[in-house]
Image: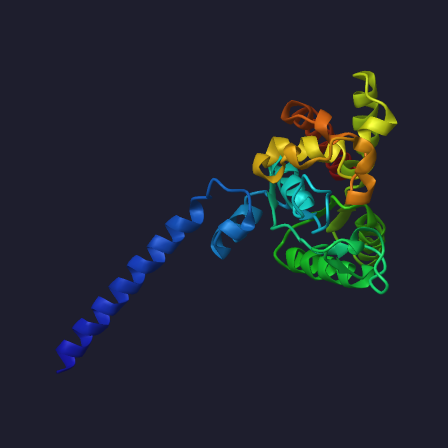
Length: 273
């Protein structure tokens, strides 16, 4: 009986050893994806230990974008941008997009919230979600936590949170970076479009040439220009401005490259300092 028990124990130990070896092999082989949601926890652990200590935290927003573009515009654009930033850096990972963002007053609704489908949260709620994500990443060993918001009203709470966390972590190596140059590159995009003959009126400020072109570049099914009214002057009542009919995927690729370059430069400057 004792021999039989010993044999069973030996076999069980051997089986556990094989499982452990398989897990160790899996942990050493990083996947092709840069999104930590596609990784196992041992892979994240080993990626951080191997030098991937920068992480991009993209946030988008679900909001109306006129009759020609889907509500999830920001989410698609910022996810594509975050992955390109991580690829350019070569030592960064990305977390899933936070899709909820401030949209202004809820009651009575203002701005985009006047249109069905727009989802808004308070600035405090948005910052609270970002803070939980940032603290989780710090606990996992990441040292450069890059907050990358694609939505205008998200910029201020993102910047305030980064400043507060950095003040708290001032004696540590961990830093939060509010990637304001990602959003700020819109000014350079507009200048580029003007150099191509566009005007401020044709460019627009919401769901215009810039937004529409970027989404055409990263998620073509999200745009249907045939739904635009015949006259651009009728667009503001439908939630958009400018002349989105002048958008193109080629323009979107060029403008997205400007934003990626600006974000990468900001991260490198921060890490170098």
